[in-house]
Structure formats: structure tokens, C-alpha cells
Image (cartoon, rainbow, N blue to C red; front, top):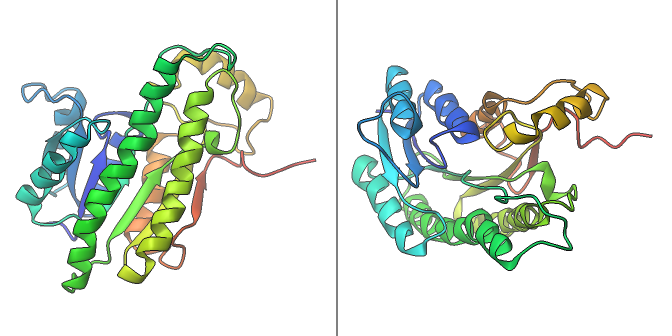
Length: 262
């Protein structure tokens, strides 16, 4: 049995996978959520992540559900509670970019609605449901103080007019994190925003050459791509209590992108 239970959305690949493995390496049981699960495939996707988690000596529960569908939220939480009896850490990581990058003057309602439903509306209401469970646990004297982590992006503050719907979703999620931090502080639930920069993942693969050039030209103080493991380390620091006096704060994992320079 791990020291606490972490429920991670979008855990099948990329940043979510990195977070799951990092927390598992620190002794946390993992409930990994993904829209689709192939129980027979242990070489890729969520079941591959589960196998790696279990190799680290903790438990893993696959959780199927679409974060954009409120009808799935209760099932996702119920599956986690069925497996572990509680949820101590919620990592809102699931997210998408636009299917096609378009100039802000051409952005479609369909693309806007898709991105906002997955990146903002879904996490808002899923957090609402999980937070109620966490409040119950805290009031019952749970040994582990619950924590909620929102994975946003440097796009919460840096405008990209060719994918504005993504920027809007992450800026909105940043305010969601602050709002839950304010509401839950007196309940003993700590809330954090982790804001990744340019992270090597499926989402950034199509624009790798462009970001290679930007990084080489000095866009970042640390001239390298970030990795899912970098984000996982930040989440592990929160889980381990190293940032306990930082509720409502933003943890930048961006290689110095956010530092203003003259």
C-alpha cells in the first residue's frame, strides 16, 4: 500500500505518464485515467503505464472516462474509491490542443468548444466532484492532507494567435486553480498550479523544428526541451509536502521562459 493515492487524468502518455511514474517512484498508489483503455496492450497507453507503476512497488488502477463528459465523472471517482478507498491527490492533467492551428480570425466555434470542454469545463466540474470527497476525508481526520494540482501551460500567459482557444483554456484553468485554492483553504485542501513550458510530447511533436530553433536562439534560459519527468518532479515535490506553504501558487516548469529580460 502506498503512502497516499494520486488520481491523474490523461495518464496514458506524455506529461501524465511522467507524473504517474514520478509519484509512483515516491511511493504513491496511482489511479490513472484515460479516455480509452486496451486491457490487452501492455506495451503502450495506460496499461503500459500501469505495468511501469507496479514495477516500482505500488498499486495501479486503470480508470476509464472522458474528462469532457460530466456523466463520466462519478464513474471515474467511484472506480478510484473502489480500488483504493480514498483519493488524496488529484492531478488535472488531461488536455488537448486544437486539431488544426488557425489564425484567431479564422478560429471555428467547433474547435473552440472542443478545446474548452476538455481543457477547462471538464477539469472544473471533475475537481468539484473530487474536492467534495477530499473535504469529507479531511473532516474525518485523514492523515494525508489532500492536494489538487492543475497542469496548465506557459500559454496561460503567453498569447499564441494561431491557437487562441488553447491559450484561453489554460488561462481560465489558472483562475480555476486560484478559486479552488481560496475556497478549500479552510477545509485543509491545498491547491496548486504547475505551469509547464515547452515539453517534449505528442502535442509538441508537430512543431518540433520551430521550437528547436526558438530554444537555440535563446527563448529559454535553460537551452533544452523540458521533459515529462521535469513536470513529474514538480508534482512529486508538492505531494511530498515541500511546498506546503504555497497553496494557490504557480510552479513554473519552463526552463526560465517566464523570466522577463531586457
